[in-house]
Length: 128
Image 1 (cartoon, helix red, strand yellow):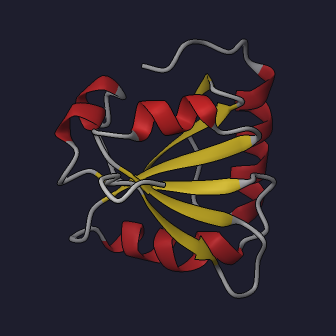
Image 2 (cartoon, helix red, strand yellow):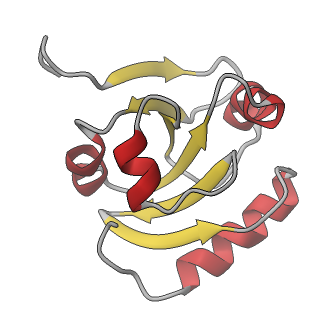
């Protein structure tokens, strides 16, 4: 990571092995294309109660992903527009640089795992 990079690696949550990254309009494409494994991309906002719950609980949920990629929707309008985010939190799956689409699920662990399985079974596409 360079000194000029706006990407900030948050680190590893205490009870889990899932890494967390903060992505922005400036670095999301590059980072998502380069990351190996499965990334759960989560658009959030500070004013959204469900988003705050997701940020607090998803890192420890033992989801079958290598990392959580957080995007602040209020500060990254370009990504919000390209991913066609209409509600928050909005979740998407990227595996090995390939886009597997949106997750339509509650934030319950079991529901998310089922939605991840469905999304990863779909044919991959290019990032939006």
